Amino acid sequence: MANQFLIKDTMVDMRGLSACEILALQSGCCAGVELLGYYEKGDTPTPIIYSLSTTLLADNGGSIVETGGIKLEHQFIEHVNALYFGVSVSLTDNAARLAVFLTI
Image (tube, rainbow, N blue to C red; front, side):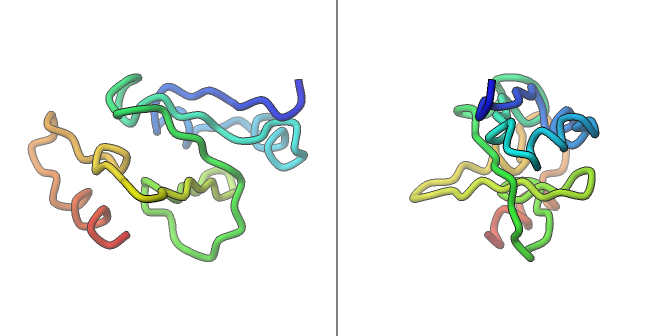
């Protein structure tokens, strides 16, 4: 079972990792977290994999997520989609999410 990924449907689910899940990440029992969507499962182009990170950069809700005293990071290479940062056609105001997305 070592090196499997925790599967989370949404960013809220990922931000709510249990103490046991965090320990599994820190001990290496789990290689990372596979996120299936931002607001709901499937609302991003593809799932993305987050790994435990020691980055000093702040949580930006997309490539770096801090939860339960740990940081998880996905390094986007070549292409990044605004949907991975919480930009959504269902939101009435995407200004804050777009501002974060445009600073990466």
